Amino acid sequence: DAKTTQPTSMDCAEGRAANLPCNHSTISGNEYVYWYRQIHSQGPQYIIHGLKNNETNEMASLIITEDRKSSTLILPHATLRDTAVYYCIVRKADGAGGTSYGKLTFGQGTILTVHP
Amino acid sequence: DAGITQSPRHKVTETGTPVTLRCHQTENHRYMYWYRQDPGHGLRLIHYSYGVKDTDKGEVSDGYSVSRSKTEDFLLTLESATSSQTSVYFCAIRSGSGSGKNIQYFGAGTRLSVL
Image (cartoon, rainbow over all chains, first blue to last red; front, side, top):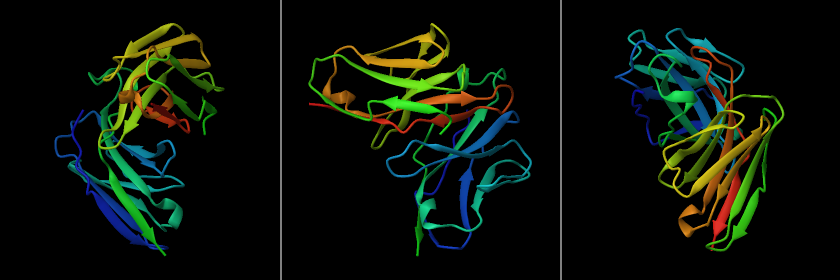
């Protein structure tokens, strides 16, 4: 699975959009980009994932560049409850020579702090 | 929360004692996972299961065993707890199958202290 690089930490004002970048320059064609977050003392929480098209759900939007070497997670109106560690994970689809049985490799992630 | 319950939520034990952590799910998912989380290491996979009585090792399986005698329960056992196994343990289930549908939902965690 491709390696990802994220900034160690970011700040955002409450009510503003939070844009979290992730670099995955070695991504291959059959690898998906997943985003999870972990609020302090809680289990990780799935946010969104995508292959090459931009994706949006009730939590966030995922923008993947055309060359797929980087992506941005967008929280459109950040709140104090969005303060968390955000993880960008790249993983092959099952059956495509990827790691077996869905193992996710969590890196260090980005600590997002939302300020009042 | 995808119907995942971990028990106990907190436990303090002594070195050398056996400890069993339980993960219970209510939605009949095939895949279940045990991770540990330590400062500076992120989450690391201990063991996983791909069906009843079907389990395999993850990247940090030494000192741990697992069992899955029924779909809803995945047990993690520390045969003889050591201080290095002081950690927060998370159980996860995988939702969906097929390309890209590897979404994992995590339990609330068990905080284990081995003294």
